[in-house]
Every structure is written in structure tokens, then in C-alpha cells.
Image (cartoon, one colour):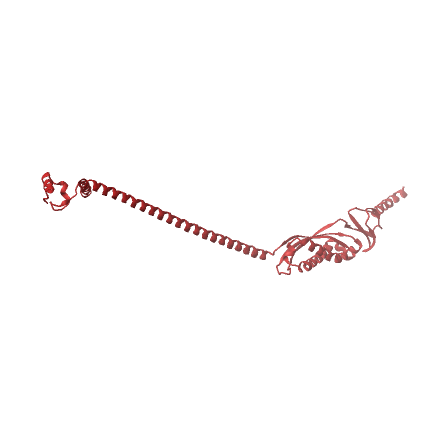
Length: 297
């Protein structure tokens, strides 16, 4: 009984030690077996593996493709037009033992800080050697490849392979952006003012042409009216002359009546004239008319 009681704790400790000696490597990761901080074993294939309990420890690293966003970086291309570049990189840990030696206990966070430094330096060097138009054009794909190729060698010293580098966004700095927008606004306002001025000039030409056409039409109408009026007056005078020649006495009588009608218009018309004035020849009595026929004035 006492013997079995002693064996039970030993058996439990053996089971615990056996379980702690076994570890599983996932297919998405790689593992290092460390003994007092020194790498003694690398496990890259998924499955079961063994270590010495209490003496050795297992450190796991992601074996998948990882992404790292680089903080926005201000660069100055050859044309001195400053740009803010926002980029990201995709990388993968290829040599976990070298990776451990390079970054120590800092792990992926420490490695990404060093990757940031490498990529920022390479980005400045590559984009600083071209113009801003090259960066903003379709040639940026070749520039991204150049940045990647330049950073590969330094990244290999970390046990990391840089798979790709991409420029997500390329903008002007905020102060330059405001100045550019202000310049664009001023340019558009100038163009609008030019268009308005040209429109006003064209309107003035059309208005002047319309006024000139109006004057010409009115002048021509007045000329035609004067011609028509003159022709009518000539015809009227011709008719009067013909009528006067046909019956002089009647024509004189008719003209006298028209003169009376115009002179005595209204109910309170007054005239001061000599009684024997010729104006009243046709208002006199029959004796006066007979005397007139006899030649008495």
C-alpha cells in the first residue's frame, strides 16, 4: 500500500514531464528550441517534436506572408516638389535561426522596426532620384520593384525575405496641398473672368450690331415713308391743279370754305379784319357778289 502510494506521484510527474517534452508545430509556423537562450534545434516541418523539459523552451514564429504598413514618409524628388508617400511591404521569415540572432527577444515587433528603417531609407533613395512626374505616372511600378530589390539584401541579414513593396498613396504635403488648391482656384477664377470678359465683349458686339441694324431699318423706313409721302403730296397737288384748271371758280370757292372752317374753328372764335377783305368774298350778300362780278371791290 505504501509502495503504491509512492509510485503514484512519480507516475504523475513522469506523465507531466513526458507531456512537457512534447510540442506541436502548426503548419502556419516555425519553431526554435532554445536551451539557456542558445538555439539547439530548428523545427520547420509541421507535426510533433520533442524537447528536454525545464531545460529547453520553444519559440514560435509565423511562417505566413506578413504585411507591414510604413508610416507616411515625406520625400523630395529631383524637381524639388515635396511629396508624402504612404507605402506597405509584404515579407516572410525565411531563416528563423538567423531571425532570432538578429532581433533577439524582440521578435517580430523589433524586426518590423528595423524593416521600417530599411524601407524608408530605400524609398528616399529611389524616389529622391527621379522627378515627381515619374512617381505619379505608370512608371511607379518599376520604382516599387527597385525599392524592393534594394531592400532585399539588407532584409536577408534579418532572416527575412521582402516579397513586395507597394506605394498606396502619393500626395502633396498639407501646406503644399493648400497652396496648390489655392493656385488652382485662382487659375480657374482667372479663366472664368476671361470667359466672362469674352462673353461681355461678344454681347457688346451683338448689341452694337443690333442697334446699328435698328438705326438702319428705321432710317430706311423713314426714307421710304418720306418718299411715299412726297409722292402722295405730288399726286394730291396734281389733282388739285387739275381740279383748279377744270373749274377755277369752284376750286376757289372750295379753298375759301376750307379756310373758313380752319379759321373759325370752335364756338368762341374771333377775327379782326376789314369788312371789304377778300377773305370774306363768299360770306357777303348777293349784292356784294353782284358788285364783285361787276368789278366793284
